[in-house]
Image 1 (tube, rainbow, N blue to C red):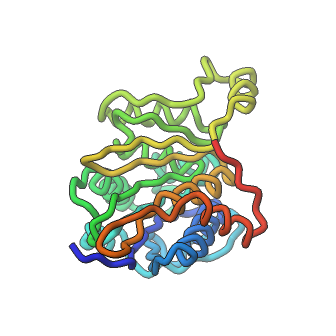
Image 2: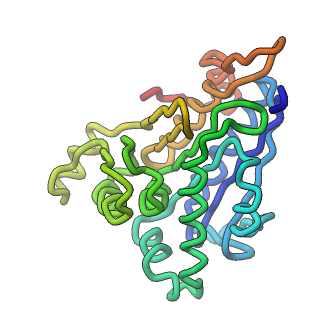
Image 3: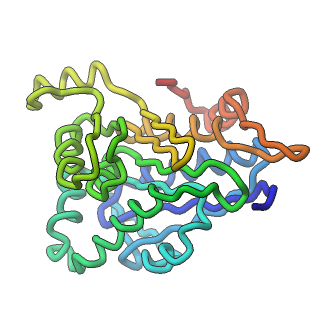
Length: 258
């Protein structure tokens, strides 16, 4: 373990991903981390080169999923962006229609589960974090990494998230808010009681953060900024809420606390 203020973050987009789900957390963490005294390196791993967002914005991953898996213990944070629910499910269940080998999708899911099961601290001796943005939760849910956790996602994906977690079979998962039988009435109720983000702390494991839809991912990312640890005089301290608010002000963003 080195008392370093340099850390690595891995993001894993997939075809038709939501552009803001990928780039908003990067912006929040880059600005907030810099204010807090951290030097953050971002890696992007994906199956396809380039990977197109729903808006047809290309992202050029610097790693394959296999390469990221080989160096998984180097990452302090792994972030899973989302997409429209149909796009997420097509990627997970019908990858052949996208020209993707199902084995590659399984490798993606295996990476998420493997990271969630790490019991060691990050290379600099700090807590690891797995974070899903919006419907990225559906991917993490199917991987099994949400087993035994309390999680959330965009209100349109709540029922599918519950189904994906049950299919993974890695333990009971509490999905918030409860939309009952679903349908329009359930969605409307969920919208009124929307959770911005949910955190499950694991003292001897990886902390799991799941956010609601799109802008909730920015709120969750700023919360993560406030929780990040900085080494100072031989011990760690959190960046803190005040500096996270400073990052929000620089972005002229109205941070909404859960």
